Image (cartoon, rainbow, N blue to C red; front, top):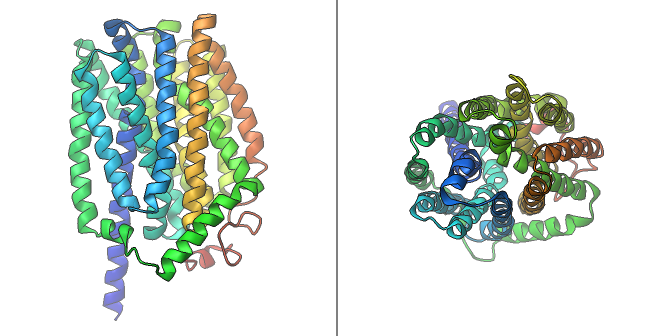
Length: 433
């Protein structure tokens, strides 16, 4: 009996590790390649294809529009066809778009493909709370979601290694082919692993009118009713401002460094490399810290570092200080995208958590649309990227203030979709399932 129990725990641990690694790889592909590769080589593509920064702002804003639409679509599909199917399908679609970009010279077609890839970043992310909630114990979700949120940094780090060699040889198209084929290969492996682990079957489940499905439907309806709950509204506003500030920060970082400040592509690649390396560990580290000091305190810490990072690019973008800015940005940016879903998963339960988190991705997409277009407009109007980094610094102060208005995660004030008060001690949390 003991051996059987030990074997079960070991199998669950292995399954949790595999799921964490696979979900991290999906985020690395859809965010690292789908969102941020264009930002790293936009200068070279612009010179080759001949488009201006108003177009860049429009294209990146369209990517956020795709994020918004797919966030809604992913939320709807996840409760019907299953989270596993949605994540695999999103990764496949992202890989096909990556391969399609170098096949055309039309900025319109490229914009459409980038918009779809921006959408897959949302649809691959929406089911994470549901999948992680089923596989990972409550007390470990902060660490796991923090690590998964750092997946973007792995993609960014790979970009920083590939960009100098491909772009230096004048072969930006080959770079898209490389990451696209790599994404499709990794997704094929992941699909096989999902199938062997039974995730597709478990996620689709019976479609009859079972009690479990009734509970899920009730929980989902409860999630939509949460719009009048104060902390949920605050989280949605915070996600809007996250998209408004965080996405343009990276999208315009390389152009600002190379064209606005006069750094060469090698230095810009170093900054991105630093961001990628630090980000690989930042999500897990801050996620672990949030299990000790709380999600709210960790978020305030992240927004403080984000403020200093943006301020350095405004007041002292000289010497190696942009590298310092990159370090601080990485320490703040990647954990933020794990801390918010951690807060939701510890404050809401069931399909209500999926719905609430799905809407947070919609508001983030709206913020990204407004932010990216505003950044491109300000560049065209003022001739300098600096002014949007001023806007970012101010936004981080607002985000810090909003964070302080959130109730403690897991407290009765934050409980959504629960039938009883959630446990508050580590011992109780380990049994709250």
